[in-house]
Structure formats: C-alpha cells, structure tokens
Length: 296
Image 1: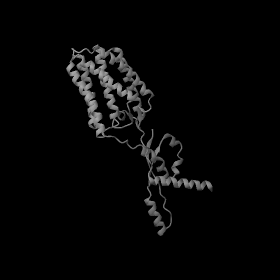
Image 2: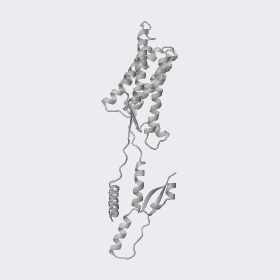
Image 3: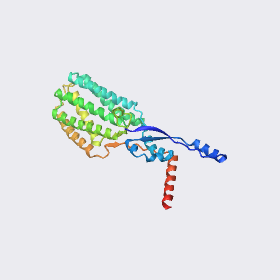
Image 4: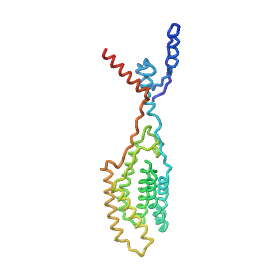
C-alpha cells in the first residue's frame, strides 16, 4: 500500500550580513518548502532520494500525480440515447405480449422499436449527436430485443428452435466479447462503479457491413412472424422458411466477421498528460549538466 507523505525541506540560512545575504534570504523564502513524494515499501528500503533537492523529488512524482487526474466524461443525455433506452424498456413488454397472445400490442411495440432504431441514428448523424456510449447501447438494444423475440417466439412455436439457438449463440458470444473489451480498455482505476459508468468512453464498437444486413434481415423475419397471427388470411409459410434460412446463413457470417475484422472494435487511447513547460526546461537543463559532467 502506497501512502502520501508531506515532507518539509529545510532551508539553511548562511551566516553573515549585508545586502547580498538579504537578497539570498529573499530568494530562499520564494522557494517552495514542501515536496510531495510517494513512499512505498520499496522506498523505505532505499531512502537515497531524500538527499535530493525538493525540485528533483517533485519532478519524479509529478507524472504520477498528473496521471491520476479524472478522465473526461462525455454528455450521454442526448435524444438518440434516450430513444435507444426506450427500446431497451420496450423489449420485455414485447416478450410479455407474445407469450400472452396479445398480437396487436406485439406488432405495435415492434413497429415502435423499428422506427426508433432508424430515427435515433438519423438524428445522431443530422445534428452531430453521436456518442461513444451510443455506439455500444444501440447494438445492445437490438441484441436484447432480438433475444426477447427469439425466446418468446420459440416458446410459442412460431420460430424454429435451431434458428433461435444460432441467433442467441452469436449474441451471447458478442456480449462476452463486449464485457472483455470494456474491462481492458477502461482507464485506471478499474472499479465496478467506473465499469458501469457509460459516460467514461473506453472502446468504440463498429458494426461490420454484413452485421448491418443481418440485423435488418433478422428484424424482417421477426416482423413477418409477428404479422402472421394478425393477418391469418395471408399465407406466409414459404416466405418464412426462405427468410429463416437466409437469416441463419447471415448470422453465422456476421459472427465470423467480428472475429476476423480489425476495425470492429476500436479501443480509445487516452493521451498521456505532458509535464509543464517549466518541468521540461528543468529536465533539459539537468541533461545538459550531466553531459558536461561526463565530459569532465
């Protein structure tokens, strides 16, 4: 465990009097008499640095102090993010309506989810309201909605179980990958509260092209499946079988695209804080002094 101690640098007053002594005394009083230093168990074993001047000890610990500054937060209270959040809230209600045969409510809520999915992306592009958290929760909302639809429709027998397993298997694999990338990209300190603080951007998810087509095909299949009970006079049998095969193929393809694509996940690198100009000047001066001593 590292502790923070406040050390006091003693200033010796030279003997003698006169104008020169007063001038030196004024300069000594202008020098900062405090120095911050991190003391660890290793430092307790080796205390050679205590003989260094205060400016040198402060310069050694300054990068650590600057690195501990809080990471900048982004504004996540935007209209696209709220529309995406409303889709997350609507997902369990859609599942409830499917299981209890409320077909009209199911179709209406599903239509709302599809419209907001198109609307939030358009607003974000039109008014430059895109956020890093939006690139994460938008596909998350689609996956949660698809999971609810797959489970509920498969439970009612409206969707083949083998297709539901393929869709859910890919989504579970992507969810585990997202958890992993969020953890490794989170700026220190890595805590539970900071992990779930979505205003701290750490990684950006970029859906692949085939994944976008696959999402559209999956939504189309779910839409046809929810419309079929409302329109019993129309025969959707052949169309549903064809759509199910196409969705299965594109789902496997999109899952493989995330594995082999290098641009699917982008980890945001936070710039390292630069030392102040005065500290850089002191470092350059010390380097020049060391070179002169080596020459001598």
